[in-house]
Amino acid sequence: MDGKKVKLRLEHISQSYIVKNEVSDAVVDVSLDVYDNEFLVILGPGRCGKTVLLNMIAGLEKPVDGSLFLDGEEIHGSDERIGMVFQKLALMPWKTVMENVEFGLKMKGVPKAQRRETAQKYINLVGLQGFEKSYPSQLSGGQQQRAALARMLASRPALILLDEPFSALDAYLKEQLLLELLELLKDYSGDVILVTHSRDEAYKICPELMIVREGRQMEKGSTRALFQNPEYLETARMTGCKNLLKARKCGPNKMELTELGIRLVSEQPVLDDVRYAGIRAHYFYVPADPAKEVNLLHPLDFQETEAPFEINVIFHTKAGAPGIWWKLEKETWNSLGRKMPPALALAPKDVLPLR
Image (cartoon, rainbow, N blue to C red; front, side):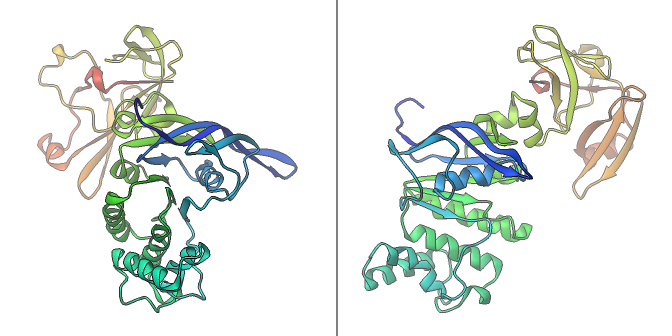
């Protein structure tokens, strides 16, 4: 990013473990720049190395290769400028909420009156006033998460690391705390890195996204751009693309779906190493005039399932070929008499060439 200072730099970071007398790679050659005041989400499936990467940044694990820099200074081990909220909350069960929140300040030698005032400020900020003397076991899961956030924020770290902070919560509480977290961080002047396996969470939270798969960095960039135009198969899969069909290049902007025998035109250049075509399930539409469309699919059969607010249809264009997903509104499906039309169209901009 032109003109912006690099806050955190990772240079060729790797981590591996010995599992049953064999080397298992957890993180493989990850390089990353995080800029001043950046909020970055790292998205990946379970056990893909996200938490290991965060642990190395926090100084909880030492990488087997590579270097980490914070504000241009190489860091080794834990650093008081970095605060972290763990997937499994690390509140001290023998301490009250107040004692937990002021613990980091106490370790820094902050005088008692000052740390009590600061801790109270952040307890109020996360909505836990009245629970100062409560122990973690007396709090709900959401309240425990708020207490952990207050403890971390009270230390005023330059970099905040959040390891799946909402994973143990139900959907309603998760949504509520997500909105509260974004509100809390509005006035925060440092950097934030959050890891999650939830694409919905990743999309809602921030404009910058990194995709991780099997310990490797797949893509990093604008969240909206990666959702709309992923370059790699794994990025498309992680961002929720339902239709990932084997393909080969057959022109500068053309691909053949090899298992279906269908050729599609893409708005994007089709590179020589493209191996798949991605089609999001809600991109199909019923053409008013099929003769004017460049991308047509002709369903042979279909199977429908009903979700609370939409219809999921799986159809085939060739016997024995993979099924294709189509998601549409119930009103649209009812207007079609709950039957498949003779043809479905796809705009070239919605055909994704994937490496």
